[in-house]
Length: 127
Image (cartoon, rainbow, N blue to C red):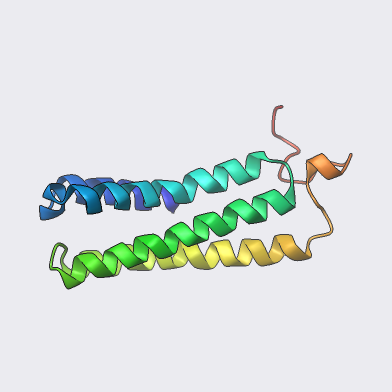
């Protein structure tokens, strides 16, 4: 879903009046990419505490994308249907991140760095 959002944002930024709004366009692209980048970085840290931290940053980037979407609709740089579709995607990502953060906070597994046992997520991962 995060990759889908980034792809949609890239398309929007290059095929829309937004392409001439350099500062907004570039920051919107950066914050959309930040979502998946922070999820990946947090996962690679092998610690639930750090993963939660990076998921929270990714969630913050979702809020930033939503803020830009409201600016774009308010300034008529995007159409209502585009706003609605992208807003739904980023809202779904944010909800999933919240659920994962809640799960990790209550999980007895604290990450590979803190345990000799591998989590089911890491069992098939090559190191």
